[in-house]
Amino acid sequence: MKTNYMKVLSDGEIEQIHTKTLQLLKEVGIKVETEEAKNLLKENGAIIENNGNNFVKFPEELVTEQLKKVPREFSLWGPDSSFKLDIDTKSVNFATVGTPVKTYDPSEKNDVRKSVLEDTIKQIRIVDTLENIHCSHVDVWPNDVPFTELHWHTMYAWGKHSYKPYGLGCYGKTASEDMMKIASIIVGGKEELIKHPRLISFFNPTSPLMLTKIMLNGLFVFAKHNQPIIIAPAASAGSTAPVTLAGLLIQSNMEILSSIVLTQLINPGNPVFYSTMNAIMDPPSGNVAWGSIETGLISAAHAQLARYYNIPSRGPGAVTESKCFDIQNGAERLMTLFCSAKAGINYITCAGTYESSLAEALELLVIDDELCSIVKRGLEGIRVNEETFAIDQIKQVAETGKAYLMLRHTAKNTRKEIFVPELMDRERRRKWERNGAKDIMARAREKIDKILETQEGPGYSSEVDKKLKEYLNLISSRTMDDYRKLEGLDEGESGSMDMPGDNDN
View 1: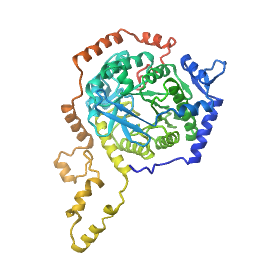
View 2: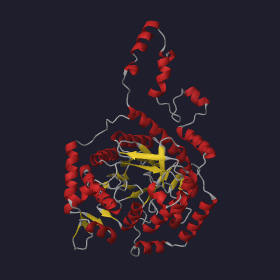
View 3: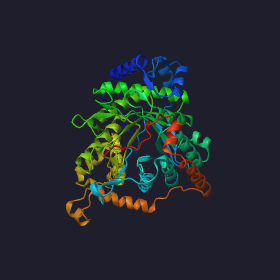
Protein backbone atom coordinates (compact mmCIF):
# COMPACT_ATOMS: atom_id res chain seq x y z
CA MET A 1 0.00 0.00 0.00
CA LYS A 2 1.18 3.51 -0.74
CA THR A 3 1.24 5.76 2.33
CA ASN A 4 0.16 9.07 0.82
CA TYR A 5 -2.64 9.45 3.36
CA MET A 6 -5.55 11.81 3.02
CA LYS A 7 -5.04 14.57 5.59
CA VAL A 8 -7.63 17.04 6.81
CA LEU A 9 -5.45 18.71 9.46
CA SER A 10 -2.01 20.28 9.26
CA ASP A 11 0.75 19.24 11.66
CA GLY A 12 0.28 22.53 13.47
CA GLU A 13 -3.46 21.95 13.86
CA ILE A 14 -2.81 18.48 15.30
CA GLU A 15 -0.45 20.06 17.84
CA GLN A 16 -3.10 22.61 18.79
CA ILE A 17 -5.73 19.91 19.35
CA HIS A 18 -3.26 17.92 21.47
CA THR A 19 -2.27 20.94 23.57
CA LYS A 20 -5.85 22.04 24.19
CA THR A 21 -6.83 18.47 25.05
CA LEU A 22 -4.17 18.29 27.75
CA GLN A 23 -5.24 21.71 29.03
CA LEU A 24 -8.87 20.64 29.39
CA LEU A 25 -7.98 17.25 30.91
CA LYS A 26 -6.06 19.16 33.57
CA GLU A 27 -8.61 21.94 34.12
CA VAL A 28 -11.94 20.15 33.58
CA GLY A 29 -11.25 16.41 33.54
CA ILE A 30 -13.56 13.46 32.91
CA LYS A 31 -16.50 12.20 34.94
CA VAL A 32 -15.65 8.72 36.27
CA GLU A 33 -18.51 6.71 37.77
CA THR A 34 -16.77 3.97 39.79
CA GLU A 35 -14.71 4.17 42.96
CA GLU A 36 -12.42 1.43 41.65
CA ALA A 37 -11.42 3.53 38.66
CA LYS A 38 -11.21 6.78 40.62
CA ASN A 39 -9.01 5.22 43.29
CA LEU A 40 -6.62 3.75 40.71
CA LEU A 41 -6.35 7.10 38.93
CA LYS A 42 -5.85 9.01 42.18
CA GLU A 43 -3.11 6.62 43.33
CA ASN A 44 -1.22 7.43 40.14
CA GLY A 45 -1.46 11.21 40.26
CA ALA A 46 -4.93 12.14 39.03
CA ILE A 47 -6.69 14.89 40.96
CA ILE A 48 -10.14 14.41 42.48
CA GLU A 49 -11.75 17.38 44.18
CA ASN A 50 -14.27 16.71 46.94
CA ASN A 51 -17.15 18.53 45.27
CA GLY A 52 -19.31 15.48 44.56
CA ASN A 53 -19.30 15.78 40.77
CA ASN A 54 -17.11 12.68 40.13
CA PHE A 55 -14.82 14.58 37.74
CA VAL A 56 -11.21 13.40 37.67
CA LYS A 57 -8.50 15.75 36.43
CA PHE A 58 -5.50 14.40 34.55
CA PRO A 59 -2.10 16.12 34.89
CA GLU A 60 -0.11 16.22 31.65
CA GLU A 61 2.65 13.97 32.96
CA LEU A 62 0.14 11.24 33.86
CA VAL A 63 -1.20 11.24 30.31
CA THR A 64 2.18 11.31 28.57
CA GLU A 65 3.66 8.57 30.76
CA GLN A 66 0.78 6.16 30.15
CA LEU A 67 0.75 6.82 26.41
CA LYS A 68 4.32 5.52 26.28
CA LYS A 69 3.09 2.08 27.42
CA VAL A 70 0.65 1.52 24.55
CA PRO A 71 1.87 -1.15 22.08
CA ARG A 72 2.28 -0.03 18.49
CA GLU A 73 1.51 -3.49 17.16
CA PHE A 74 -0.23 -6.61 18.40
CA SER A 75 -1.99 -9.71 17.11
CA LEU A 76 -5.34 -11.43 17.47
CA TRP A 77 -6.08 -15.11 16.97
CA GLY A 78 -9.14 -17.16 16.14
CA PRO A 79 -10.53 -19.71 18.61
CA ASP A 80 -8.27 -22.58 17.52
CA SER A 81 -5.29 -20.20 16.85
CA SER A 82 -4.99 -21.22 13.18
CA PHE A 83 -6.00 -17.70 12.06
CA LYS A 84 -3.83 -14.75 13.08
CA LEU A 85 -4.62 -11.08 12.50
CA ASP A 86 -1.73 -8.61 12.82
CA ILE A 87 -2.53 -5.02 13.74
CA ASP A 88 -0.10 -2.10 13.57
CA THR A 89 -0.05 1.60 12.76
CA LYS A 90 0.33 0.98 9.01
CA SER A 91 -1.99 -1.96 8.39
CA VAL A 92 -5.45 -1.73 6.83
CA ASN A 93 -7.87 -4.34 8.19
CA PHE A 94 -11.63 -4.65 7.90
CA ALA A 95 -14.31 -5.99 10.23
CA THR A 96 -18.06 -5.87 10.74
CA VAL A 97 -19.91 -2.97 12.37
CA GLY A 98 -22.97 -1.95 14.35
CA THR A 99 -25.52 -3.40 16.73
CA PRO A 100 -28.43 -4.26 14.43
CA VAL A 101 -31.54 -5.70 16.01
CA LYS A 102 -33.28 -6.01 12.63
CA THR A 103 -32.46 -8.19 9.65
CA TYR A 104 -33.32 -7.68 6.00
CA ASP A 105 -36.04 -10.09 4.89
CA PRO A 106 -37.88 -9.29 1.62
CA SER A 107 -40.76 -11.56 2.65
CA GLU A 108 -41.62 -9.28 5.59
CA LYS A 109 -43.44 -5.96 5.75
CA ASN A 110 -40.99 -3.12 5.07
CA ASP A 111 -38.41 -5.81 4.21
CA VAL A 112 -37.16 -6.18 7.81
CA ARG A 113 -37.90 -8.29 10.86
CA LYS A 114 -36.40 -8.73 14.30
CA SER A 115 -33.05 -10.51 14.24
CA VAL A 116 -32.86 -14.03 15.65
CA LEU A 117 -29.98 -16.26 16.70
CA GLU A 118 -29.93 -18.02 13.34
CA ASP A 119 -29.13 -14.65 11.72
CA THR A 120 -26.23 -14.21 14.12
CA ILE A 121 -24.89 -17.66 13.26
CA LYS A 122 -25.18 -17.02 9.52
CA GLN A 123 -23.33 -13.73 9.88
CA ILE A 124 -20.46 -15.41 11.74
CA ARG A 125 -20.26 -18.21 9.16
CA ILE A 126 -20.28 -15.85 6.18
CA VAL A 127 -17.58 -13.59 7.66
CA ASP A 128 -15.43 -16.64 8.28
CA THR A 129 -15.13 -17.18 4.52
CA LEU A 130 -14.60 -13.60 3.37
CA GLU A 131 -11.24 -12.47 2.00
CA ASN A 132 -11.14 -8.99 3.53
CA ILE A 133 -13.41 -9.05 6.60
CA HIS A 134 -11.06 -10.38 9.25
CA CYS A 135 -13.24 -10.21 12.35
CA SER A 136 -16.93 -10.33 13.16
CA HIS A 137 -18.43 -8.70 16.24
CA VAL A 138 -21.68 -9.14 18.13
CA ASP A 139 -23.27 -7.23 15.30
CA VAL A 140 -26.53 -9.12 14.97
CA TRP A 141 -28.35 -9.01 18.28
CA PRO A 142 -30.75 -11.98 18.50
CA ASN A 143 -34.20 -11.20 19.90
CA ASP A 144 -35.15 -14.84 20.46
CA VAL A 145 -32.77 -15.54 23.35
CA PRO A 146 -32.91 -13.94 26.81
CA PHE A 147 -30.87 -10.75 26.90
CA THR A 148 -29.11 -12.00 30.04
CA GLU A 149 -27.84 -15.00 28.02
CA LEU A 150 -27.03 -13.21 24.79
CA HIS A 151 -23.26 -13.18 25.35
CA TRP A 152 -23.18 -16.95 25.86
CA HIS A 153 -25.17 -17.73 22.71
CA THR A 154 -23.12 -15.43 20.49
CA MET A 155 -19.78 -16.65 21.83
CA TYR A 156 -20.87 -20.27 21.57
CA ALA A 157 -21.74 -19.66 17.91
CA TRP A 158 -18.41 -17.88 17.32
CA GLY A 159 -16.24 -20.66 18.73
CA LYS A 160 -18.19 -23.34 16.88
CA HIS A 161 -18.44 -21.70 13.47
CA SER A 162 -15.48 -19.34 13.00
CA TYR A 163 -11.71 -19.47 12.72
CA LYS A 164 -11.42 -15.68 13.10
CA PRO A 165 -11.31 -13.40 16.20
CA TYR A 166 -14.46 -11.95 17.71
CA GLY A 167 -15.57 -8.57 19.05
CA LEU A 168 -17.79 -7.84 22.04
CA GLY A 169 -18.59 -4.91 24.31
CA CYS A 170 -17.63 -4.05 27.88
CA TYR A 171 -21.12 -4.93 29.11
CA GLY A 172 -20.32 -4.87 32.81
CA LYS A 173 -18.14 -6.90 35.14
CA THR A 174 -20.34 -9.97 35.39
CA ALA A 175 -21.00 -10.48 31.68
CA SER A 176 -17.36 -9.66 30.87
CA GLU A 177 -16.14 -12.23 33.37
CA ASP A 178 -18.51 -14.71 31.73
CA MET A 179 -16.98 -13.87 28.35
CA MET A 180 -13.46 -14.51 29.65
CA LYS A 181 -14.49 -17.84 31.16
CA ILE A 182 -16.36 -18.91 28.03
CA ALA A 183 -13.40 -17.92 25.84
CA SER A 184 -11.00 -19.73 28.19
CA ILE A 185 -13.03 -22.93 27.85
CA ILE A 186 -13.01 -22.61 24.06
CA VAL A 187 -9.30 -21.81 23.61
CA GLY A 188 -7.86 -24.11 26.27
CA GLY A 189 -7.41 -22.01 29.38
CA LYS A 190 -7.08 -18.51 30.80
CA GLU A 191 -3.31 -18.40 30.26
CA GLU A 192 -3.72 -19.17 26.56
CA LEU A 193 -6.36 -16.44 26.26
CA ILE A 194 -4.07 -13.87 27.88
CA LYS A 195 -1.03 -14.92 25.84
CA HIS A 196 -2.89 -15.05 22.52
CA PRO A 197 -5.87 -12.65 22.65
CA ARG A 198 -9.00 -13.80 20.83
CA LEU A 199 -11.45 -11.02 21.65
CA ILE A 200 -11.75 -7.32 20.85
CA SER A 201 -13.70 -5.26 23.35
CA PHE A 202 -15.62 -2.06 22.64
CA PHE A 203 -15.33 0.56 25.38
CA ASN A 204 -17.61 3.51 24.68
CA PRO A 205 -17.14 6.71 26.68
CA THR A 206 -20.48 8.46 27.00
CA SER A 207 -20.26 11.89 25.47
CA PRO A 208 -19.87 14.45 26.77
CA LEU A 209 -16.95 13.49 29.03
CA MET A 210 -18.24 10.50 30.99
CA LEU A 211 -16.92 7.01 31.70
CA THR A 212 -19.95 5.06 32.89
CA LYS A 213 -20.12 2.45 35.60
CA ILE A 214 -21.23 -0.42 33.38
CA MET A 215 -18.47 0.21 30.82
CA LEU A 216 -15.77 0.71 33.45
CA ASN A 217 -16.72 -2.54 35.17
CA GLY A 218 -16.22 -4.38 31.90
CA LEU A 219 -13.03 -2.50 31.01
CA PHE A 220 -11.24 -3.76 34.11
CA VAL A 221 -12.07 -7.37 33.22
CA PHE A 222 -11.00 -7.16 29.57
CA ALA A 223 -7.78 -5.30 30.41
CA LYS A 224 -6.83 -7.75 33.17
CA HIS A 225 -7.13 -10.48 30.53
CA ASN A 226 -4.98 -8.55 28.02
CA GLN A 227 -7.68 -8.38 25.36
CA PRO A 228 -7.38 -5.47 22.88
CA ILE A 229 -9.78 -2.62 23.60
CA ILE A 230 -11.39 -0.29 21.09
CA ILE A 231 -11.90 3.05 22.84
CA ALA A 232 -14.66 4.59 20.78
CA PRO A 233 -16.58 7.74 21.64
CA ALA A 234 -19.80 8.02 19.65
CA ALA A 235 -20.50 11.72 19.97
CA SER A 236 -22.79 13.64 17.67
CA ALA A 237 -21.59 17.10 16.65
CA GLY A 238 -24.28 19.56 17.69
CA SER A 239 -25.91 17.39 20.36
CA THR A 240 -23.39 15.48 22.51
CA ALA A 241 -20.32 17.36 21.26
CA PRO A 242 -19.63 20.87 19.98
CA VAL A 243 -21.11 21.47 16.54
CA THR A 244 -17.68 22.59 15.34
CA LEU A 245 -15.68 19.57 14.22
CA ALA A 246 -12.49 20.87 15.84
CA GLY A 247 -14.36 21.10 19.15
CA LEU A 248 -15.67 17.57 18.70
CA LEU A 249 -12.10 16.36 18.08
CA ILE A 250 -10.86 17.94 21.32
CA GLN A 251 -13.69 16.44 23.38
CA SER A 252 -13.22 13.04 21.73
CA ASN A 253 -9.48 13.20 22.33
CA MET A 254 -10.13 13.92 26.01
CA GLU A 255 -12.37 10.87 26.27
CA ILE A 256 -9.96 8.60 24.41
CA LEU A 257 -6.75 9.67 26.16
CA SER A 258 -8.30 9.45 29.64
CA SER A 259 -9.56 5.94 28.83
CA ILE A 260 -6.13 4.93 27.51
CA VAL A 261 -4.55 6.18 30.75
CA LEU A 262 -6.92 4.03 32.80
CA THR A 263 -6.39 0.98 30.59
CA GLN A 264 -2.61 1.22 30.93
CA LEU A 265 -2.86 1.62 34.70
CA ILE A 266 -4.95 -1.56 34.88
CA ASN A 267 -2.60 -3.54 32.62
CA PRO A 268 0.53 -1.77 31.32
CA GLY A 269 0.98 -2.59 27.65
CA ASN A 270 -2.62 -3.63 27.06
CA PRO A 271 -3.41 -3.26 23.33
CA VAL A 272 -5.81 -0.43 22.49
CA PHE A 273 -7.26 1.18 19.39
CA TYR A 274 -7.50 4.97 19.16
CA SER A 275 -11.02 4.92 17.80
CA THR A 276 -13.97 6.96 16.63
CA MET A 277 -17.63 6.35 16.06
CA ASN A 278 -18.25 10.09 16.11
CA ALA A 279 -20.57 11.68 13.59
CA ILE A 280 -22.85 14.68 13.26
CA MET A 281 -26.39 15.55 14.22
CA ASP A 282 -28.52 16.03 11.13
CA PRO A 283 -29.99 19.52 11.76
CA PRO A 284 -33.45 18.94 10.19
CA SER A 285 -34.17 15.63 11.95
CA GLY A 286 -31.95 15.72 15.03
CA ASN A 287 -30.78 12.18 14.20
CA VAL A 288 -27.20 10.98 14.05
CA ALA A 289 -25.90 10.95 10.47
CA TRP A 290 -23.09 8.38 10.19
CA GLY A 291 -23.28 8.32 6.42
CA SER A 292 -22.36 12.00 6.14
CA ILE A 293 -19.25 13.46 4.54
CA GLU A 294 -18.45 14.97 7.95
CA THR A 295 -18.12 11.44 9.35
CA GLY A 296 -15.40 10.87 6.76
CA LEU A 297 -13.64 14.08 7.81
CA ILE A 298 -13.89 13.13 11.49
CA SER A 299 -12.49 9.65 10.80
CA ALA A 300 -9.62 11.12 8.80
CA ALA A 301 -8.77 13.50 11.65
CA HIS A 302 -8.81 10.62 14.16
CA ALA A 303 -6.44 8.67 11.90
CA GLN A 304 -4.03 11.62 12.00
CA LEU A 305 -4.31 11.92 15.78
CA ALA A 306 -3.71 8.18 16.19
CA ARG A 307 -0.53 8.45 14.09
CA TYR A 308 0.54 11.45 16.19
CA TYR A 309 0.32 9.23 19.29
CA ASN A 310 1.67 6.22 17.36
CA ILE A 311 -1.31 4.05 18.30
CA PRO A 312 -3.33 1.77 15.96
CA SER A 313 -6.59 3.38 14.90
CA ARG A 314 -10.14 2.21 14.33
CA GLY A 315 -12.92 3.98 12.48
CA PRO A 316 -16.18 3.33 10.62
CA GLY A 317 -16.80 2.70 6.95
CA ALA A 318 -19.70 1.62 4.73
CA VAL A 319 -22.18 3.28 7.08
CA THR A 320 -25.44 4.71 5.81
CA GLU A 321 -28.74 6.10 7.01
CA SER A 322 -30.58 4.61 4.01
CA LYS A 323 -33.42 2.20 4.85
CA CYS A 324 -33.30 0.44 1.50
CA PHE A 325 -30.80 -0.59 -1.16
CA ASP A 326 -30.76 2.58 -3.19
CA ILE A 327 -28.16 4.98 -4.57
CA GLN A 328 -27.88 6.71 -1.17
CA ASN A 329 -26.96 3.38 0.42
CA GLY A 330 -24.20 2.72 -2.08
CA ALA A 331 -22.89 6.28 -2.19
CA GLU A 332 -22.61 6.62 1.59
CA ARG A 333 -21.10 3.15 1.94
CA LEU A 334 -18.26 3.76 -0.47
CA MET A 335 -17.69 7.37 0.60
CA THR A 336 -17.22 6.57 4.30
CA LEU A 337 -15.26 3.39 3.56
CA PHE A 338 -12.81 5.11 1.23
CA CYS A 339 -12.39 8.12 3.54
CA SER A 340 -11.35 5.86 6.43
CA ALA A 341 -9.06 3.72 4.28
CA LYS A 342 -7.40 6.62 2.47
CA ALA A 343 -6.91 8.44 5.78
CA GLY A 344 -5.01 5.43 7.13
CA ILE A 345 -7.45 3.94 9.65
CA ASN A 346 -5.89 0.61 10.64
CA TYR A 347 -9.04 -1.31 11.62
CA ILE A 348 -12.15 -0.30 9.70
CA THR A 349 -15.47 -1.63 10.97
CA CYS A 350 -17.51 -1.55 7.83
CA ALA A 351 -19.51 -4.58 6.78
CA GLY A 352 -23.11 -5.67 6.69
CA THR A 353 -25.36 -2.94 8.05
CA TYR A 354 -27.61 -0.10 6.93
CA GLU A 355 -30.24 2.20 8.55
CA SER A 356 -27.67 3.80 10.88
CA SER A 357 -26.34 0.28 11.63
CA LEU A 358 -29.64 -0.76 13.18
CA ALA A 359 -30.39 -3.25 10.39
CA GLU A 360 -28.29 -6.08 8.96
CA ALA A 361 -28.38 -7.54 5.48
CA LEU A 362 -26.31 -10.65 4.94
CA GLU A 363 -26.10 -9.67 1.28
CA LEU A 364 -24.27 -6.50 2.30
CA LEU A 365 -21.57 -8.57 4.02
CA VAL A 366 -20.39 -10.03 0.73
CA ILE A 367 -20.97 -6.77 -1.17
CA ASP A 368 -18.92 -4.86 1.40
CA ASP A 369 -16.19 -7.47 1.17
CA GLU A 370 -15.96 -6.69 -2.54
CA LEU A 371 -16.00 -2.95 -1.81
CA CYS A 372 -13.02 -3.55 0.49
CA SER A 373 -11.18 -5.20 -2.41
CA ILE A 374 -11.96 -2.20 -4.58
CA VAL A 375 -10.74 0.22 -1.91
CA LYS A 376 -7.55 -1.79 -1.39
CA ARG A 377 -6.89 -1.57 -5.11
CA GLY A 378 -7.38 2.17 -4.90
CA LEU A 379 -4.89 2.40 -2.04
CA GLU A 380 -2.28 0.53 -4.08
CA GLY A 381 -2.18 3.41 -6.52
CA ILE A 382 -0.29 3.21 -9.82
CA ARG A 383 2.89 1.16 -10.18
CA VAL A 384 5.61 3.24 -11.80
CA ASN A 385 8.75 1.38 -12.94
CA GLU A 386 10.53 0.32 -16.14
CA GLU A 387 8.17 -2.60 -16.72
CA THR A 388 4.99 -0.58 -16.24
CA PHE A 389 6.17 2.24 -18.52
CA ALA A 390 5.64 -0.36 -21.30
CA ILE A 391 8.04 1.46 -23.66
CA ASP A 392 8.89 -1.63 -25.70
CA GLN A 393 5.24 -2.61 -25.99
CA ILE A 394 4.19 0.83 -27.23
CA LYS A 395 6.96 0.64 -29.87
CA GLN A 396 5.99 -2.91 -30.83
CA VAL A 397 2.34 -2.02 -31.37
CA ALA A 398 3.30 1.07 -33.35
CA GLU A 399 5.67 -0.90 -35.59
CA THR A 400 3.69 -4.12 -36.09
CA GLY A 401 0.07 -3.14 -35.60
CA LYS A 402 -0.40 -5.92 -33.04
CA ALA A 403 -3.15 -5.53 -30.45
CA TYR A 404 -2.05 -5.10 -26.84
CA LEU A 405 -4.35 -7.98 -25.99
CA MET A 406 -1.98 -10.37 -27.80
CA LEU A 407 1.16 -9.32 -25.92
CA ARG A 408 2.75 -11.39 -23.17
CA HIS A 409 3.21 -8.16 -21.20
CA THR A 410 -0.58 -7.80 -21.03
CA ALA A 411 -1.12 -11.33 -19.74
CA LYS A 412 1.64 -10.90 -17.18
CA ASN A 413 0.39 -7.60 -15.79
CA THR A 414 -3.41 -7.69 -16.11
CA ARG A 415 -4.10 -9.14 -12.67
CA LYS A 416 -1.52 -6.84 -11.10
CA GLU A 417 -3.12 -3.75 -12.60
CA ILE A 418 -6.84 -4.43 -12.93
CA PHE A 419 -9.20 -5.57 -10.18
CA VAL A 420 -11.87 -7.94 -11.50
CA PRO A 421 -15.03 -7.89 -9.35
CA GLU A 422 -17.12 -10.96 -8.66
CA LEU A 423 -20.43 -9.26 -7.86
CA MET A 424 -20.33 -5.98 -9.76
CA ASP A 425 -21.84 -6.35 -13.24
CA ARG A 426 -19.83 -5.23 -16.28
CA GLU A 427 -21.58 -7.20 -19.03
CA ARG A 428 -23.47 -5.75 -21.99
CA ARG A 429 -27.23 -5.55 -21.49
CA ARG A 430 -28.06 -8.42 -23.87
CA LYS A 431 -25.83 -10.91 -22.04
CA TRP A 432 -26.98 -9.59 -18.67
CA GLU A 433 -30.60 -10.22 -19.67
CA ARG A 434 -29.78 -13.74 -20.93
CA ASN A 435 -28.26 -14.46 -17.52
CA GLY A 436 -31.44 -13.48 -15.70
CA ALA A 437 -31.09 -9.68 -15.42
CA LYS A 438 -29.94 -10.08 -11.81
CA ASP A 439 -29.05 -7.07 -9.69
CA ILE A 440 -26.17 -7.10 -7.22
CA MET A 441 -28.42 -8.16 -4.32
CA ALA A 442 -29.51 -11.27 -6.24
CA ARG A 443 -25.90 -12.14 -7.08
CA ALA A 444 -24.91 -11.57 -3.45
CA ARG A 445 -27.74 -13.85 -2.32
CA GLU A 446 -26.47 -16.61 -4.58
CA LYS A 447 -23.00 -16.25 -3.10
CA ILE A 448 -24.41 -16.42 0.43
CA ASP A 449 -26.30 -19.61 -0.38
CA LYS A 450 -23.10 -21.23 -1.67
CA ILE A 451 -21.18 -20.17 1.45
CA LEU A 452 -23.79 -21.54 3.83
CA GLU A 453 -23.89 -24.84 1.92
CA THR A 454 -20.16 -25.45 2.35
CA GLN A 455 -18.72 -23.43 5.27
CA GLU A 456 -17.56 -25.46 8.25
CA GLY A 457 -16.09 -24.10 11.46
CA PRO A 458 -13.74 -25.72 13.96
CA GLY A 459 -16.57 -27.14 16.07
CA TYR A 460 -16.17 -28.40 19.64
CA SER A 461 -14.98 -31.56 21.25
CA SER A 462 -17.63 -33.27 23.37
CA GLU A 463 -15.75 -32.21 26.52
CA VAL A 464 -15.62 -28.52 25.58
CA ASP A 465 -19.25 -28.56 24.45
CA LYS A 466 -20.30 -30.05 27.79
CA LYS A 467 -18.38 -27.41 29.78
CA LEU A 468 -19.87 -24.58 27.75
CA LYS A 469 -23.43 -25.85 28.23
CA GLU A 470 -22.82 -26.32 31.95
CA TYR A 471 -21.72 -22.70 32.11
CA LEU A 472 -24.95 -21.67 30.40
CA ASN A 473 -26.84 -23.16 33.35
CA LEU A 474 -25.08 -20.69 35.66
CA ILE A 475 -25.85 -17.75 33.38
CA SER A 476 -29.47 -18.83 32.95
CA SER A 477 -30.02 -18.73 36.70
CA ARG A 478 -29.45 -14.95 36.81
CA THR A 479 -32.13 -12.33 36.29
CA MET A 480 -31.64 -8.78 35.02
CA ASP A 481 -32.07 -7.59 38.61
CA ASP A 482 -29.22 -9.92 39.59
CA TYR A 483 -27.02 -8.28 36.97
CA ARG A 484 -27.90 -4.80 38.20
CA LYS A 485 -27.04 -5.74 41.77
CA LEU A 486 -23.77 -7.40 40.73
CA GLU A 487 -22.83 -4.25 38.77
CA GLY A 488 -23.74 -1.93 41.64
CA LEU A 489 -26.36 -0.14 39.55
CA ASP A 490 -29.02 1.89 41.34
CA GLU A 491 -32.66 0.85 41.04
CA GLY A 492 -33.90 1.77 37.59
CA GLU A 493 -30.37 2.44 36.34
CA SER A 494 -29.51 0.25 33.36
CA GLY A 495 -26.38 1.84 31.97
CA SER A 496 -25.55 -0.03 28.77
CA MET A 497 -27.52 -3.15 29.68
CA ASP A 498 -30.42 -2.36 27.36
CA MET A 499 -30.80 -3.97 23.96
CA PRO A 500 -29.50 -1.62 21.25
CA GLY A 501 -32.35 0.00 19.40
CA ASP A 502 -34.87 -0.81 22.15
CA ASN A 503 -36.42 2.61 21.70
CA ASP A 504 -36.10 2.66 17.94
CA ASN A 505 -39.10 2.35 15.69
